[in-house]
Every structure is written in structure tokens, then in C-alpha cells.
Figure 1: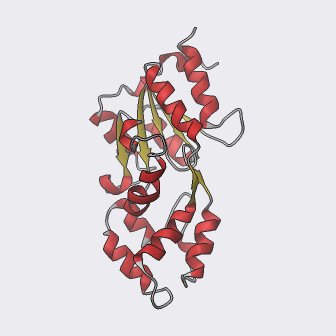
Figure 2 (figure 1 turned 30 degrees about the vertical axis):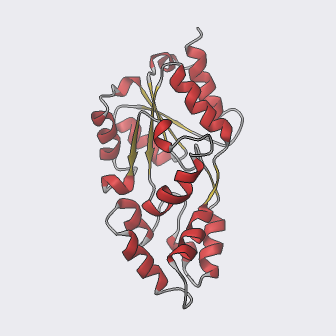
Length: 218
């Protein structure tokens, strides 16, 4: 086990690809069915183009986002139609991951979310997924930093610095869990430790959290 893991007191979680399972192709298909011909080009897994990017950075309002997309879609497409199609990007939030977040906090870790996300998903699908145990997303974290609220996205180093400064975190005691190599590199440049989450039983969110919990027992 890496020596520095024993010094970790704060864990920052990415949302999509770490806590929430994603399927970009489902969203592309759903948006294409609404008439958005270039959905595959506009909607990237790690980077998006306008108007999706503007929504994620908070530079574009939700109303403007809907209006721009509706102009490229079949007549009669509603905000609700677009929301449903866009949310197809998000597959599920397994209950065992919520349970792990609670275990981490009970073990004494400070837990944070740092996500490139947007108000459409965050205020609908994501909010509902975190209510499955009866609480809200805020009940699982000591702090949340979302790109659309900060007007910048990962891998901009400033969003990592913003979180650590806002919550008084020591970078050397902080670990970022993300599924993007670029984001892990940026977190390291901000002084934190970083681990790229995969999808196997050895490198997924649950496995890494179990390793962190083990440090509390040794």
C-alpha cells in the first residue's frame, strides 16, 4: 500500500464515472431521436461543446440552453423532453456507493464532491438519485463544488484550489478520486493526491474506499 494513503483525511469524489454510472451513447441516441443531428459531436464523455459546455460552466442559463437545443430539434419538443433525453447519460447510483460515503464519514474522513455537472441534471436526476435513502445530496458530503456554480470546469486547477481553500483542506492530506486522467493530473498540480477510478473490483470507488477504511484499522 502507498505510504501517503495513511495521511489522507479528506476525500474528494468526482460524481459521474465514480459515484454515478454513465452511458454517453444512451444520451446521444435519445437526443438524436429528438432531432439533434450532431448530438454525438456535441456531447462528449470528458468534454462537451456548446450549448452543453456553456450550461456546465454556468455561462449559459437553463432557459437559453433549452431554447438553443429546441431550435435544432423536431417541432413540439419540450423542456421536459430535452431533460429526459439528456438525463439518459446517467445510468444509476448504486445504493452500496451511498452506503460507502456514509461509512467513510463515520470513520472520520471528510467527504467532498467536485463535479463537472449542470443544473438540468443536478436538479432533477441527480437530486432524485441521492434521495433513495431518504436524505438529500447534501447529507452525504461535507462540501460540494459544482462546475456550473463556480463558472469553470475540471481540469482547470482553480476549481480544485477553490474547494480546498473554501473548506480549509491541506492538499497533502487530500485525495481526489476521478475517472479522468486529466483531472487527476490537475488535482496533483493543485497539491493533492489523486487516483484514477476504473471499473474493476480492484480500482473502482468501493475498492479504493475500502483501502482507505483499512488505514483506520491499522
